[in-house]
Image (cartoon, rainbow over all chains, first blue to last red):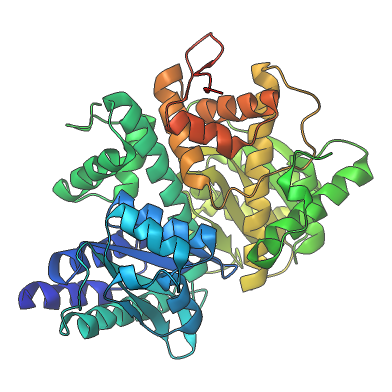
Length: 238
Length: 263
């Protein structure tokens, strides 16, 4: 495990200056780093919205986004269970989980995932969501990875809950609202890019993320620029 | 017979949007007319600790203009912001996030919206809450709520306000369907809004695809998608899925081309 990157990640997740804070990018950082550093092929984050309903707020690729969504739509799966019980749900072999989550296990395997660990994002009694790490190969997880992942989830949770402004003690719900709109933006941009370049949604998402990373821009900003055609985006066909 | 899934009483966390829809629908019934954005305004005033509500259609390219207001003060606030080009409404639209001002007399605000703040206070407003109406890059307007005394919206009230704004967004876009002259299969389902929660991605992806297929902006694309669904009595989510899976393709000035399913 890259200790330097790990330390850097903790610092970045703990940075909760409200003025610059973008929830989508914050969660994107969390999922990307988990995939880079830990025993995971893909990662997703589910957060509860203002009504306590879980939403897919971040996903490192389209496959895992669809799988997270599948759990919500079918009301079945480890990530959902993790959120409801507020304890980690660790499944080294999804092949053995067909009795527990029949539909999810089948969908996960169709998506090419063999193992998952879902970690609660909670602070004391308050649970805001779940950080979910997926791996293509089944098998036990690296024992060093789980506590680190939980630590990242914990720091991220504290950061989210401590977003404050001068007027109000918490603005998490407002930021969730903005983030939900950012997700819509990203999906709209995926559609436009996919159609324009004749690629599928997964490729479109990869292209958008790649552009945002390469130019150090917010994913939502790139998405908006693409939809509004307000600037040339090299490589994205604008 | 109902094509409208929302007619079934929902359970769980969708209670809020269902409750809001009901409040708005009741206002329309009282007016004896089809549900419209003015009903969102009157329902919001009844449900929240505010004195009035106003709504403006906003655009980056065309002129913005007030659409409705519940009293003189909110009417003045809408006019003020658009005339002055400053204020929480303008900021909310520009930033794409709610601008909540519990007290216009708060230090610092005077500099930010100097002229607006003075004028608004004189008109009788003390707290102003501006909520952008938006669906991704589609941002047709802003909903403004005011109170005559310093007011803070608590978590539940803010969640309700946001739900009113969500409903207003769809209603505002629906009026565009009438304007496109798209054929409809009958009267538009009154207050019928599918739960877009689970299917949001396909609908938004399809909108994006249509911007290219039709050569139009994202708002027009979404409106055309919705108009097509209404005209055929199909769920928006199903039409969107057909577009995304490329079973259905739109082209300018022509009926959408659908691959016939093998039977």
